[in-house]
Length: 331
Image 1 (cartoon, rainbow, N blue to C red):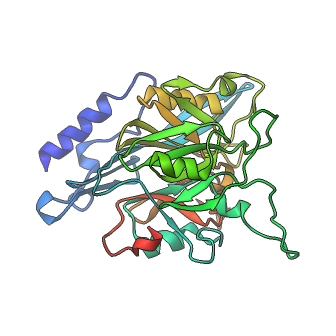
Image 2 (tube, rainbow, N blue to C red):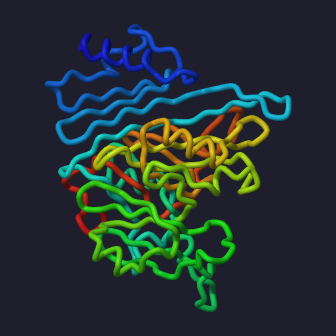
């Protein structure tokens, strides 16, 4: 176990310049927090210092929480965010869990209910497509555009925006997840759902904008006039097939927490080595779980003088490390 702790400390020391994890010492990592290999997968949960790790033959996850002080218009704010680096595999790929119903994921529930039911090692908020598929009392959809959405080879939504016109938020750019563990981002109407399936896509998320494609940052997000504000945000990207990066940033209440710009998210993804990345639903939707526990939310609230997560209802989550007992139809 001492070798495991030493490797963790070395990883923290080698963080990129300008980025710092909260202080970790050998004394802060107890026998209960790091389980020996013979008892099963390596599991580290160090909430106080912002370090979470999981390692098995099929899946490795390393999460670090950062807390930085940033100055905006002469006022100091806290920028709190988690970076998860994930090495998945064919045996434990990127997946999703969804609420049940005629259209999986349309019903909105506390995301804790989804993690309690399916027990993934890691989970985070996704493109929130289910909300766009909700109907009003007269049977019409609440939202005019739903995006191209596919889960486990099933087409759930197809009505997307015209990329040649000025698009409202979300612009519904997509990320396709393929069977070989690779992902690729596209402008919203680049392909029909049928074309994505012919290309070998297993899942397609729709939110946007795309942040990285072919290693290049989307020029739109570098435009200072393109949604020029800080928000709680979440994104997922790929370094190479089965090697992913997920980032979630807190941003509310906005009088205390800085949130991030889209350009910050794109540049952070590129700094982590990603070649493809997509911006996911932000605001109160932003949620990241590890081993069934909430480790970061986009916004928090005060209850009885204590700061607690402020969870928004959701219909689906990105997950890694689903147990074999999870129902195949809803993975």
